[in-house]
Image (cartoon, rainbow, N blue to C red; front, side, top):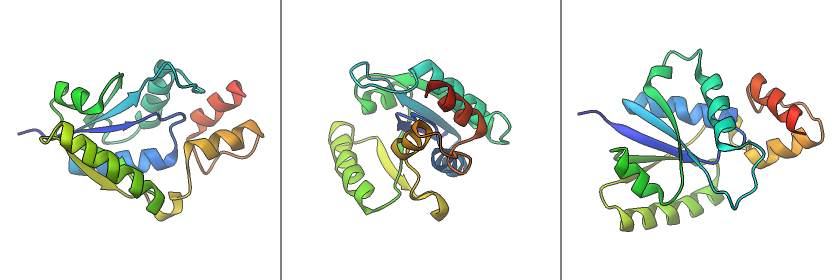
Length: 161
């Protein structure tokens, strides 16, 4: 039986923290689907196709790249999980405040779809402070992004700002 997990997020932009969680997920699951949330009411730096392309570029040289799919979705995550026959949701947790929010979401998702489990993964401790919103702030002020995002993401952010 193949084990498929969804790794959902906005990934705007895709950071080294996201990459670290994704690599950890590939060690646990046969297939991990990076699931890009697309919400036309939410303002993002990159559109869904751009985010998907940046993720593909970030994993193109990884030995586990064939275990990863990238997909966009709208609507309820658990419905998308069931459509993709995924039994697990991967959630990255960097700090206690993340856990509080993610815990509530996990309970809600369990109520909506008892057959879909949530697994919390922590990134490498050197990446626990990295967030997409902080990365965007650094990019806006033309700061050094090299320790937060892959080079191609940094270049894409520079072009946007």
